[in-house]
Length: 134
Image 1 (cartoon, rainbow, N blue to C red):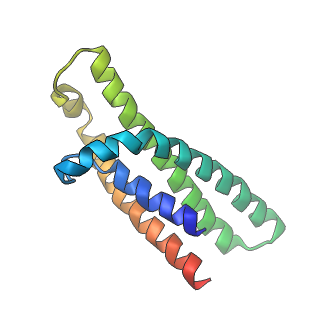
Image 2: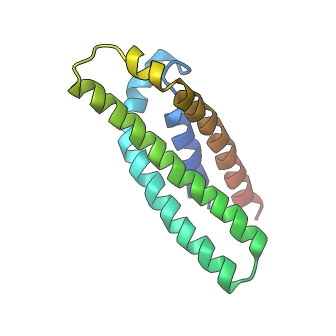
Image 3: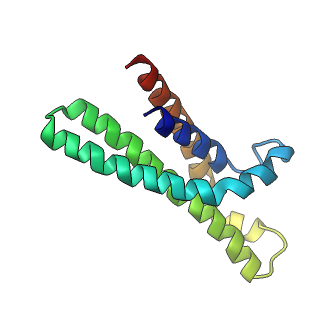
């Protein structure tokens, strides 16, 4: 659970749009997005299966629902990080030097990604705290 919480925190940080972060972090973040997209999806699906089994076998509905929340957040972050990678690839295919056209069309989605990344960082901190105090 501790490793899973750390994955959530790191994926939340990686999903923050580059305009919000310091310039020296941007290269590092772009380098590791693909890796964490796959890690988030694997952890998310794995935990989803475990917590669904816990709901039906242990009859502990509260822990099952909280666990489902964490696993869905991981799957969501994996998809968001993967989408950001595809955004860059689409720009390369279209030979565009700026992202203004793409960002103007997706302003709402960018706000959603920013908010989601901060929510997921908070969920990751909660999961780490649960792991420590359990």
